[in-house]
Amino acid sequence: MILIYVDQITERLIYTLGFIFKDREIPYSLTNDFVKFEQSEKAKFNYSDRIFENCININPCSLIFDENIGVYEIDKGLFFEEECLSFNGKVDPLASIFYVLSRMEEYTSVDSDSHSRFEGKNSVLFRFKWNEKASCDIWCEDIINYLLKHRLLSNKGVKPSLSLLPTFDIDNAYAYKYKGFSRTVLATLKDLLFGRKKRLIERQRVQTGILKDPFDTFDKITSLKDRNIDFKLFWLLGDFAKYDRNISVKNSKQQQLIKKMSEVADIGIHPSYKSNSYEYYLHNEIERLEAIINKRVHFSRQHFLVLKFPYTYKTLIEQEITDDYSMGYADICGFRAGTSRPFKWFDLTKNETTKLNIHPFAFMDGTLNEYLKLTPKEAIKKIQLLFDEVKKYGGQFSFIWHNETIGNYGIWKDWSEVFDFSIDLNIK
Image 1 (cartoon, rainbow, N blue to C red):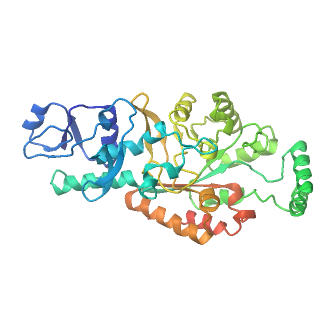
Image 2 (spheres, one colour):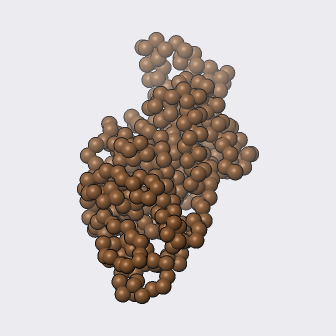
Image 3 (cartoon, one colour):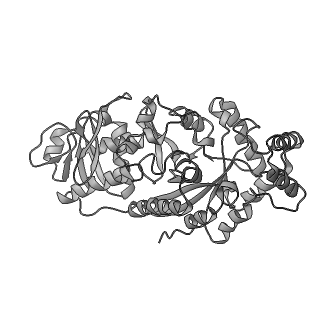
């Protein structure tokens, strides 16, 4: 048991120490009683400005003890063996973990893309080229190694386990089928107007049953179950709009497909684009999915990865969502929260740990192909590097594919081998 002294015990501190020690089953206790601390014969660690004789310490910045969402001058510096963040000139690995894990920078950022998303390229981890590193896990180990060197710990504790979690967003179940009369006519007219002869022929062959719909890769997805690979699906059930283009939830074929897939995998809600502005839509879409699969829906992933702090997560909690899988970026790969481990969301507006479980993902198919413009071979190398990082520190190696991206269709020609590679990664 290690005894940690602080001048003030805060929820931010408890949250951070839980991530460092509790998850590794390393016992510790906290005190702000300096007399008790001085008299204790336990292994002792001082995280304060107070000076104790014969006791190692980290001189903290104010971030973990502040009550407000502050703006700090951020740089980097060496703590023990690893670089971490410095705040107003103070190098502090505990504050670094809390800052990144809580996503504090996103509360104060005014930079966003056309979808009002905080971009990875604007993050502090990207600034220091740490976005593809499990930074919070690295800083945890650095703190533990520091304590081991000074013989305050006898071991590193239990390493977080490693698991693989493929996930799929179903934005558009079919390319041509079941679109309804109006959408089909309009799409056909557009193809005629722009001279897209190939699409005209393809649509006709699919609708007459000669050709399989190119987005219909559900047999391939289902086959993962035969290999004992667990996976999750996130289904878009919003009404048709500019960025919500799935077939109608009223379509019996759509409902049959959802019911069929629910027999082999958990299905979560993929909140519509417009639900970011109106909570009513999210509530309605959750009810739609629950009515189809005949069970409660407790997990979700944001469509277009639109994640706004703290609004999005507060809304999910209000709608009784317990697990969210949106923690990642569209424009870059890596670890948005500095870890691949699931963790509880800390609400900075209330300074409290919530019940919402956050599940980070390491990459999305569209990031590799459409944002980073990687070739399939380059994408495989990128995935291997990300996986090696998770394997080193433990966690859930989760990633996003879509049903339309794994069938070698259109701009995704030759990408099925990338998908297969990601599924075949060896977690042993």
